[in-house]
Image 1: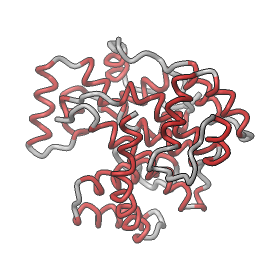
Image 2 (image 1 turned 180 degrees about the vertical axis):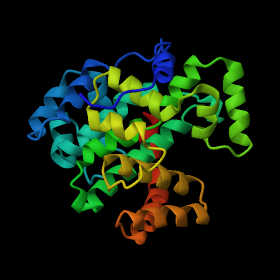
Image 3 (image 1 turned 45 degrees about the horizontal axis):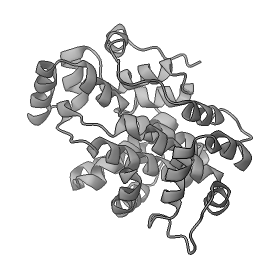
Length: 285
């Protein structure tokens, strides 16, 4: 269990959650694989094969333009053979959690599907960064999972906050306040902490919980750990979706302070922009 603890304000808000049920057994089994160093194809297949609906969606995804396989696949073993167990794991996690994340977030002026698309893009960028920065020795599937769930707190707030509070939060953001500053002024906590609080209750791995809790800011003197990776993946996804040269440069400067190459950030923003239309197929499921 992680040493991280949420604030009383976050715990009080998360205690109001009624519609976000704990993940299905398939997801619980898959998340359990994150803690195992010996995960293989058989383990992933066993976790997925007893969920026919998930298996059908994975087959549809494997045959989509996103992967561009030269021949159609017709079974889960074939999907695992062509895509590999790590890719199937990440797809299964995304599809399984889509019902939670593919919701409207009125306080942030986000229509249904908008937050989900950002979460998917952040997850993919997190995976790419984990692969690119070999010295950090970060697991790509763990990075993907943390990136996918980083904004879960926004869904929580959309459910538990009164309409008046959501509207006040939206007004503050529209006037130029960052979401975290506005949240803390109104609630005494923020969406990063609230999301991490719920994931902690769901027994997600400690590093994932801690990374989500701090994904909106770099800790002083931070190294390029999972928390920093999700911070950069989130920033890169935002820059790719709403291009801002000044913000991209600022993100590059922060990367250099951690010993990363500035062109890694620039390349990642370009790659994220290219991935957006391809991820639409995953979003549709």
